[in-house]
Image (cartoon, rainbow, N blue to C red; front, side, top):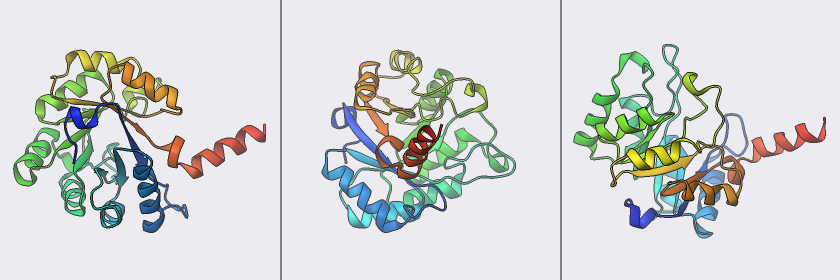
Length: 229
C-alpha cells in the first residue's frame, strides 16, 4: 500500500460513508462504491466502522483503506475513533491507516491522546491519521507520532464552529510547520475538482472527498431544499 508521500502525492481518497438509517449504509453498497472509486483512479478509500472496513477489504483486497469508527459518548464531544477499543477494532478489521480525532478536547472515560497514540504504535504498529481542527493540534499530533495529519475537523469543533471548511488557511501553515515526512491531507468541504486542485496547490499531499462523490442522501437533500425555496 502506498503510505509515503511519493505514493500518495496528488492523489484522491474517496470517503465512502452513509448516515445511519440510509439504505446506502449496507456492506454491499459501501463495498461497491469503494470499488467503483478505486476503479476510476482513487488511490484509496476512507471508511467508517469495522463492518464496512471488513466488507471493502474482502471485495478489494489490495485497496488502501483509511479506517475509523464513529461512536458517541455522553462525557465527550470526541466521536472519531475516540478510544483504544475503537482503534483496535478498526485495525483488526483490515485498515491500513487508523484515523482518529487528535484535537485537544477531553476524550471519553478520560482517555489520553498521547497514551492512545503510543499504544497504537507500540502494540499494533499502526500508521495513524490525526483528524485535527487547528495548526497547534496538527503539530502536536505529529510530535506524538501520527504519520498523517488531516484537516477533517476544521469547522466541526467548538473552537472552530464559526469557520467553514475547506481549511484553506490551515493548509499552508501546516505544510510549512509540519515535519517533511508527515503527510498532509485536506479533508472536509471539498465539493469540486477545482477545489481539490486548490487543496494540492495549498500544500496538501492528497485530498479526501466524501459527500460530493458518495453522499447520495446529503446531496439529494441539498438539491431538494434549493428547489423548494
